[in-house]
Image 1 (cartoon, rainbow, N blue to C red):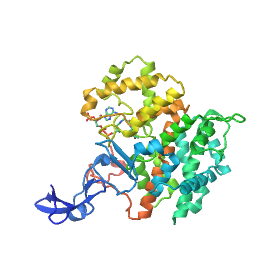
Image 2: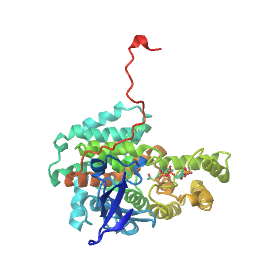
Image 3: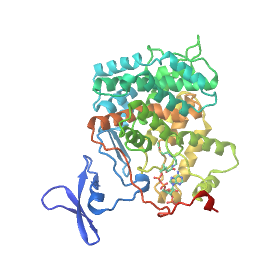
Image 4: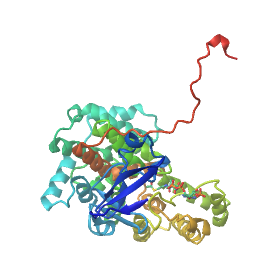
Length: 435
Ligand code: ACO
C-alpha cells in the first residue's frame, strides 16, 4: 500500500503485518524515483525483505549517474550520454564523473598533465609481469597488478583529503593503460613499450599495444576517436555488479586500489563485462559453424544458451550506448575500409531477435556489448583483452563511486541478510558413531 501523506508532498508507505500497521518513509530522488525506506524494518517488525539479485533494492543514494531503463535514458552528472559522446573526451568525462562538474580548460590540462606524470609503473612492477604465465588471462593480471599498486604507494592506503584522493585516482586511471597493454605484450612475447607523455590518453594506449621498437604505431584520428568513445560510453553505469562490488569493498574502509581491483574481478564474468568477448565468440560461431540464425535463436529460446549482448537488468528499451556504438561501428569500418562479416551477422541477428516474440515479450534489446566488439576488432584489440578494455573505461566510474561513499562517510558496512534454509539444530555425532 502506498499513498500520499496528508500534509507533505512526500509519500508514506504503510505495511500491515499481523494486524499492526507500520509507516515506512518514502525517499524521492531528483528524477522523481521513489523508494520505500526500510532501514528500520527489522528492528520494528522482526521481518527482513527478500530480493535475490537486488533487483528492487536501492543500496545507496548517489549523485553520479542516472539511468531510466524504461525510456532508454543515461546521464552522467545530469548530462545526456548522447551529448557527451558527441562533444566530450574520455578524460573530460572522467573528470566530470569523479569531481561532479565539467572541467575548465585549465582543470582539464592539469588533469592531463597529472595523468602523464603518473603513467610509468615502478620498475619493480615489470617483474610482476615476468611471474605470470604467458597464457595468463589479462583480466587476472590487471586485477592483481592494480591491487599491487597499494604496495608501491602505502601513503595512499588511508586517504585523508582531496589532494591525496586525486593523486591515487590519477595513478589508477593512468597506470591501468600501461598495465593493460603490458599484459597483452607479455602474452605475445613482445617487448614492453613505455608510455610516451607526448601522446594523448588513447593514442598512448594504442602506442603501448601496437608499437614495436623503432616502429611507432600511429593511429588515425578516427581510431583514436573511436577508442575515446568506447571508453566514454563505458565510464559509469550506476549500481551494476562491479560498481556495487567496489562500493561493498569500500564499505569495509578498504583502500581505493583494493576496491577497484575487486571491481575488475566482478566485471570479468560473461553476464557482465565479459559479454563483449562472448558476443564475438557467438558471432564467429555463427559465421563458421553450421547453425543458421533462426536455429541459433531456437537454442536461445529453449534456454540452451543466452543471446549474448542482449538483455539488461535495467534497460527494458534500447540501451542508448548500443545505439551510439552501432553507428560508430559502421563509421569505423567505413573509414578503415574494412568489411567485417561479423557486423553483418550482428545486424541480422539483432533484426531477427527484435522481431521475435520471445525477445519482445521479455523486453530484451541489444546492450552496450553487442556492438562494442566490432569496434575493438577494428582497433586490432584481441578478444581476450575486451573485458580489460571495459575495465579501463569503467575505472573513472568506480573511482567516483568509491570517493562518493568515502566522502559521505555514511555508509554502514554492506552486509545483506539471508533466509536460512539448512538443517535445524542437529546433534554432533562423534566420528566412531557415523555410518
Ligand atoms: N538471451 C536469452 N534470454 C534472456 C537473455 C538473453 N540474453 N537475457 C534475459 N533472458 C531471459 C531470461 O532467460 C528470462 O526468461 P524467463 O522469464 O523465461 O525465465 C528473462 O529473460 C529475464 O531474464 P533475467 O535473467 O531475469 O534478467 P536479468 O535482469 O537477471 O539479467 C542479464 C540481465 C544478465 C544482462 C541478461 O539479460 C543476460 O544474461 N544477458 C546476456 C549477457 C550480456 O549481454 N551481459 C551484458 C549485460 S550489460 C553489461 O553488463 C555491461
